[in-house]
Length: 358
Ligand code: GLY
Image 1 (cartoon, rainbow, N blue to C red):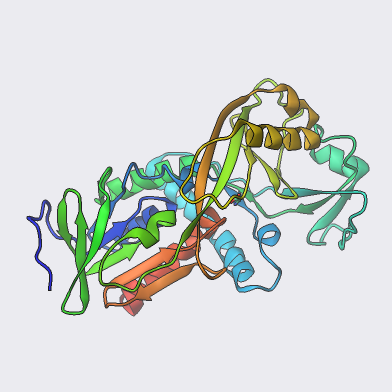
Image 2 (cartoon, rainbow, N blue to C red; image 1 turned 180 degrees about the vertical axis):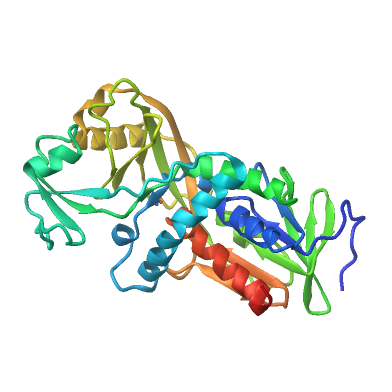
């Protein structure tokens, strides 16, 4: 049995913990179906992993073919055009969805396992065909694979648009409002306890990213660990001729171009707990790797560098669904692929919560 603190707000149908892309997407989806939503973020929405990400949408490169994650990634990728278009229509904001292909350079030793036929997936690009698509690529790279329908989205623009769409739909967003505990009464979720007071709701969704396992309460716990990724941004304005035109994915280094001339370069993968420090040596190593693929990038000083925490669960596949007690749900453990899997996650959660009454 719990005692409620003085509640600082009207009850909601649903409390969502965490305002990253997952929490915001679910909030918007459920609010569009008429649910009243209160969303809590320990800082500002969209400032953790959703801000740190590169925004790659590359299921075939990220996942083993035929695996459950690969299937989830493919489905989510197919949902992306409508998800992005509807969001842009609702908010008037551009989210820079680019599904014009991803290129993965091959070393001389690598056997392509693909052909240059027009309908091969991926297609093998050699010599002039590669240089035609990427004039700035290193002359040392003579072959690459081309995944024509994959790409990227500007994840920062996306989370900003989602926050606007949520507000337009009446979602109450509480920044700087850490959830300390999930409240349970009579074997059902009853809301959340925050530093600002208690909020009651019959549905509570945990989408708190790397912090999802840190919330107290007599609920089924989720086991999520942070995996650090350091990244940098190069402002390539003035280099339009040489700029990567596609997302480039090469042996744990990736380059993601934005419409406005920025190029995002990622990423380290480090088990360092909640440490988000940025190390010059790691940034320099990434910068050098990027310059090995597009030599002109070596002459551009990084404009920004940062570190984010990917939320890794015990299983490869994120957990999206009900937990105990009744009324408690989680959408957690998206690890490297929260941006890619957001449209599918919101649909799975909507199906779980709204059932067939939708
Ligand atoms: N999705 C790529 C990364 O986490 O670095």
